[in-house]
Each structure stands twice: as structure tokens, then as C-alpha cells.
Length: 136
Image (cartoon, rainbow, N blue to C red; front, side):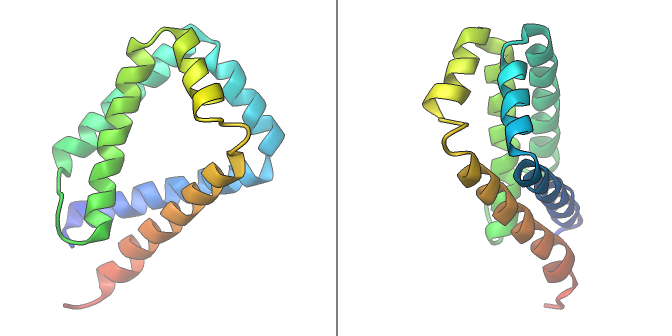
């Protein structure tokens, strides 16, 4: 596993774990915050710009589609983050809110999203911290 993959596994894994635990601890607050955020166009634009920046950075450093599940997951997260940034910057606020709240059913599937984020974070942390030390 490359140094870049280990670093990004650790970074993204810890991020996902912290976000998932916060989501699970503060469900109503998180749902209300996301709904309010989706209707704040200037803030959505800034969030989109940061997502673009993060997605491009990950892709430029780590565009790896082989070598096991961890490197592929890191690359996929980079591309998905880039696409999210493009959507947040490019879509009208009404469409963005519709996408998250209605089509992706954010509130109804909240526990699923939190669970997937938790599982992803746990695996990436495992890959970044534990598997990275395993001699090959």
C-alpha cells in the first residue's frame, strides 16, 4: 500500500467515523441542519467549491483503480466528492434540495446513511492503520 493510500485511508476513515458518530448522536439536529443548509444558496456554493477542491486534490494524488479494495475506495470517494462539488455549484438550489431530501430520501434513510458512513470509516481506518503495518 502506497504512502498516499495509507494517508488518505486514515484521513477519510477518521473523518467518516467522526461524522457517523455525530450523525448517530444528533439525528434530529443533523437532519434539521442539512435541510436548512440545502436552502442556503451562498453556503451551498461555498460547500460546493470545497467539495470540488477536495475531490480534485484526492484524484490528483490518488487516481488508483487497482491494488485492493482500500485504494479503489479512496479513488471512488475522490471522484464522488468531485461530482458532488460540481452538482452543488452547478445545480439550482431547488434541485439540490430535491435531490437530497426527496430523491435520496435523506430523512427516511438517515440510519442507513449513518451506518454506511460508519462502516466505510471503520474499514478505511483498519486499512490505513492496521493493514499498512502488515509486512508483505
